Length: 147
Figure 1 (cartoon, rainbow, N blue to C red):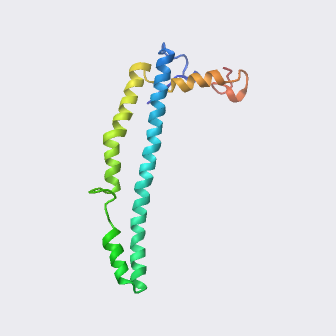
Figure 2: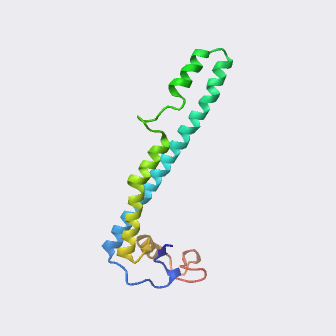
């Protein structure tokens, strides 16, 4: 369970210095970018799989139209083909997760735990506090509270 350094949880423990907060914010931003890249990788995986299954339909239609040579070429040259030597897309996703994503995620969590007592998003919480308009109901830290 993550802990956020904002007014909803009352005063947090003595926080890290501003540079550490900024560094952890930068580390988290980098991880968020990796999360997006990972999503694109899953999109690549799913789109490639969808295309491969659509080839079944193309092969069937080519045969139905009497183009047996073309149907055979699509079936033997492209259908089920590796996207990289020796790899299907799921293997690329698995390798990315094991080699890069999971170690990055674990390091970021460990750094937040060690340097900010597990309080995530301190940088954003600081920005939120600085950018609020006192007395405005949509800027309150909690329902009905000014901040």
